[in-house]
Image 1 (cartoon, rainbow, N blue to C red):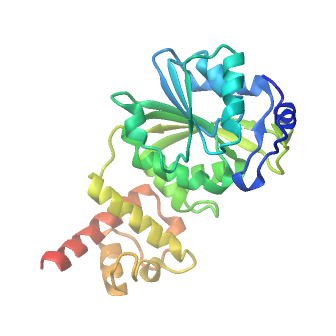
Image 2: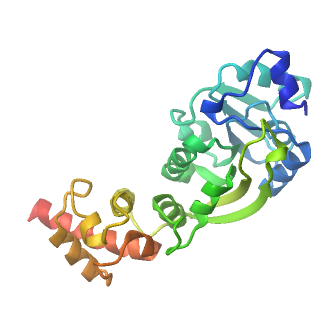
Image 3: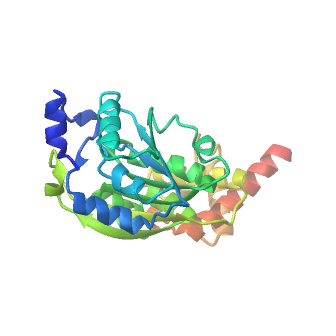
Length: 285
């Protein structure tokens, strides 16, 4: 593994702050992450933001095939050279935006193992996209800024608990794997990083249509998190009145004076069912 700073300097390049580029620079840490992912020759891997190949190379040595999706057009040629130099032939570099990549098309008839060191500025959006496509994802082993990883795993009642926490905990089991300090990256970030494993559930309580509605309910509830649920749920997001919100909350056994951060996944699921019923009655009479 060539040190990222050396590679960039040799090509007159630099890490782009706006893309959240902090390249993993420690080969032992990279090997540890790949080992924790438990890859085998049967696995089809999607790597998000491969950068200069710190994870790509050790992962390719264990996996059957890797699709490495890199948004930065400057880095793709460098990454291809690094892969060639390491004798890697089972990794395909795709220059593109992961938010626009057709994940089911990449997966084909298989399920993907997703890996990556995700930039903070779009980590949440990427996770929501993986949730949407989780039927094609076996599991994900991802690195985040520690603060965001704590948000993902935060229980109800904690200040970190929010929309992302509820959606991820509804759809998956999350296991923290390791913490990495700033000195293991180039350039050094100002914060620690955390690697987590996300194992998506094969089945969830709601149908796809009702699940989409659940996510709308969660979003509405947290959009005005300082307000009571009676007030935060009412409005354009769900197109319901405060009276509708109270009816649904009471039918769900939830005090309308509570706030979103006190509800667990089961509470949100029950609430969305009751709000769905109200919506259907309004729609069909």
